[in-house]
Amino acid sequence: MSSEEAAAAASSCSREFRANPHPVYAALREAAPVCPLSPPHGVDTYLITRYDDARAALADPRLSKDMYGAIDAYHRIFGDSSIALDDNMLFSDPPKHTRLRRIVGATFTPKRVESLREQVQKITDGLLDRCPASEPVNLLTDFCFPLPLHVICELLGVPENERKQAQEWSATVAQTGFGPEARKKLEIAEGNLRDYLVDLIARKRREPDGALLSALVTAQDQDGALTDGELVSTAWVLLFAGHKSTAYQIGNAVYHLLSRPEQKRLAVRDPEAMAAAVEEVFRFETSVENSTFRYAKEDIKIRDVLIPKGALVQISLTSANRDPEMFPEPDTMDVERPNVQATHLAFGLGPHYCIGAPLARLEMQIALGTLFARHPDMALAVAPEEARWLTVPFPAFRGLAELPVVLDPS
Image (cartoon, rainbow, N blue to C red; front, top):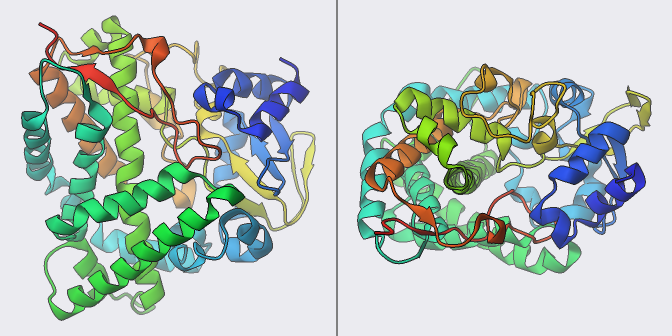
């Protein structure tokens, strides 16, 4: 595949590319590692695909995450409805990012995450108790999505009878993509979520509890508390990113382990082996295919390509994690691969490293460990090559459209 063909495939975001982007990324790493794209949404971008470039770009302060600085491009991609939900640490630079991260980090602590272990196990067991064992079940809808949704809602303090609606609005955002034709659906779903979170925060002010959202409402540091807009936006990003990425990641892990019996055998030996397998799945098929948009605050030269001031930049985490210069035989899943947790970029790098990484790891390890312990003979209900991946243009995530399995084929 030539560099021109690879760039055209990545720009088009066709169903074929969405179903299997890895050959295109491999061609781009070789021939055009910093590649200008002209996708159908009408906003030109530069795509970074090699590991060392991605690692440097993720921590480069010249690449801004504050999309208000590229507001015209932002409007063309996302429309107007997303702005109110993007006033958070994910879309900001220092010093604002530093302040927001400090406040959220003081409440979203490793101790708080670890305190959820028993509840995560209880939710996992309850969901599996309700799954039919002898007939095909779509594990995405019956297990992979409900688990992290219930966990993040427990963490935030979302009432149980309100979780289903929040999940439906979030699903619309995750599965619609960002093309112009999707904008109306996005506006409605995001508007509903924003209104819901405003109401939920008001309730937490009236009746505080011990959950994370209530703690964020009252959190203060030397620079003051979160504003109302920052509170709503922070709740949104924790709710949305806190369950969608993990849900698709659990699905990716189950699919790839069931497709590779020897890898599954190695992964299920003990909790330490499963923890290592989880990290390799993060590398091999991360659910977060690209980092969120950045824009160049000045002219930046990467390799031989000049990225002009104001240009949008995307960093392909999927491609970087399969760079053969960093990972030997990168297209082979090896659950015994050494040092992978310290090197993969599934959670990003630098100031914007995913604050939810400890929770995602906890959920993945418990979900997979329990699933395979309870159903050691579980099998895919379709041939691996027949699996359907998300093919909507410009999806927020890389994952399966469905995951049909039989838990107990006997």
